[in-house]
Image (cartoon, rainbow, N blue to C red):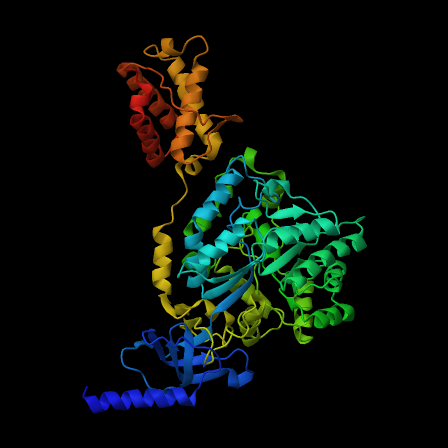
Length: 601
């Protein structure tokens, strides 16, 4: 290209920028990267009807902000820009999930207060998994087209999670609340940093708010649990005390209130954000008036009302989007009810498995969603992701499809997940629409989201804070770090380990080559050693019949020929119990690798 042509191209670019002047602050660094998306149909969710779609548009991004949006015919491309050919594609603002929980994973083990599987997978192990896997969970959200989330309550380490997201390019923006101010205790979730803390007075509530304010939360959240016989006025006073303390510091109040009476009490107390549907009664004029007075947001979280029953009745099945985009670790664990020994399945879960319930969305909840929307109260798409059966990332597609059953159009659902989601984030001036000056959080889709809300899952690429990500590359990165079920899980957990060891010890006690070593009751020591060894090396808890066996190996001091006999006896047991070849090889390998700890020298 000659000099005149380059100058002409640069002049056209400058003129196009002046025609679409930005309305907000821009990254003006001379070396800021420039990305140009060319030829796409741009969706403007803040607009109505046909005006919401603009064909053959070019979007210029400078640094982390949108510099211009306009017809491709008049848009220039600056020299050195990264160009994305988006002809035949659609661009929407980055999606926002207004209700998630990173301290939960979505699998069966994440809420032992609802379904206690801790004899199979200790809750502490589940929490550590969730912490360690945050980078992958962040990527799952981006791969699903979600560039911002509101984590609306969890342990104090939630604030560390927010810091991690801020410092990780491949992560959504995160607004956060700390521990829930609650009317009730939830001991099964308390490992020393509880996500839910009971308060019994207004002073207690103010004290907990003060602790959280020191960590600069985006919300203070109250878990408003009302039961027959409770003093509603006293509870409302606790909510008001929390809200007043939050508002004095410029922080919004979010409230979990699922009954009409508690939702109205929460609004009277100053709630800014109702994070669930009203599920027990039709909303009334008083509710609407209170919500409008507060300029409150309403987040329906409909799918989670079914996800628990689906998962715990063993009828949950991954959608196409979940198979493609969810964390493979979690998807694999969702079928664990087929492997967990019956003796370790809670009675409630066993009943659900025996008689699976109807998991269709509640007509009342859908009616309330429609009534709230029609009343002009901003509805925020949110999923309660992390709860059992509500998998981080692609659960948004289940939620948005359900919202259309309330009569919302795909455009209205998209508005709830963008324009209104930005309000939940407190970033309505920076996110939610595709306009000059806005932060460059965008999703490029392979199909028209206004024709079918399910097309929102057809993510090709996304831009978060000006940085371009490929859905395929994100997905491959997530899959490369995923591990399937552990050997402990594949063997059937502690019951499977016990069965193998008990049978092997019986063989050894009857084996003349080695039984003298374990006479006089010493076979119990052998039991302990083998249980400890297999649990530790197979990814299971080191617990033997309720007793902690995570002890230092002191060796069995066997002779070489005795060790060989032990291995043979173990192999016979594995064959007798029909342990599959892969698992048999792994168990024998564990023993072989431990030879030096077992054989005396």
